[in-house]
Image (cartoon, rainbow, N blue to C red; front, top):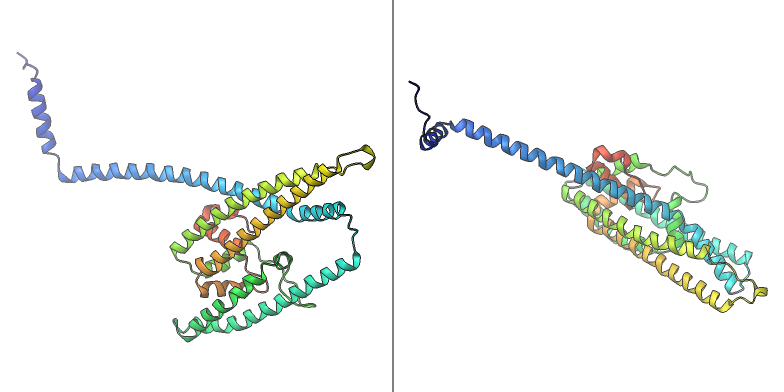
Length: 318
C-alpha cells in the first residue's frame, strides 16, 4: 500500500536537512539580492525627497525675486509719502546734487575695484605654477587686505544698487553685458571646490533664501498697507493726526525691514568671501567676473546647479 504521510517532526527534520545542505554561494547570493532591493528602495525614497526639496527651493527663489522687484518702487513711494507728510517740496537742485554725489561714490569704487583686479590678476597667474609658493601667498594676502575695504564700501545702499545693475567701468568705457547663468557656472566650476565646500554652499544658500523670503513677505504686506493708505481730505474733517501716525509707523517698519535685508546681504557676503571660499578662490572669482562685481548668490546658485545636473536649467541666477 501507499506510505503514510510523514509526521510533522519528520517534515521539520527534512527541512532542516535541506537548509543545512544549501551552499554558501546560494546564501551569499540571496543576501546580496536582499541588500540590492533595500538599497534600491532607499535610493527611490531619497530621489522623491530630493525632488520635493528642489521644488520647495524653486518656490522660495521665485518668491524672493518676485518680491525684490517691488523694492525700488516701494522706496520711491515711501520717500514721496514722507515728503507729503512733512510738506517738503521736491528740490530739483538738491536731487541733482545727490545724484552727482552717488556717481562720485561709484567712481571711487571703480578706482578701488580696478586696483584690486590689477594687483590680483598677475599674482593669480603666477600662483597657478608655483604650487602654493610666494605668488600664491601674495595673492591670498592681497585678497585678505582688500576684502574688508570692499565690504565696507558695499554697505552704501545706493552704491550697492549701482554696482549690481551696471559694470564697474569709468565714464566712456565699454559697457559689457552682465554674465549669464552659464558664465557663472563656468566661473564656479573653475574654482574646483571640495565636496565639503559645495555642501556648505548649498546649506548657506538654502538658509539665505528662506530668510530673504520672510523679509520680502513682510515687505509685501507693508507695500499693500501703504498702497491702501489714502491721503486724507482736509475738507472732510478727517483725523489727520491718526493718519499721520499710521503712515509714520508703516515707514518706520519699512526702514527696519530694509535694514534686515541689508544685514542679511552683508552676512552672506562675509560667509561667501571669507568663510566658504578660500582667498585664492574668492580672488579668482573676482578677476574672472571683471568688470562686473562677482555675484555671491549667482555663485551659490551655480554650486547648487552643478551639484544637481538634472535640475541645472531650473536654477535661477541672482
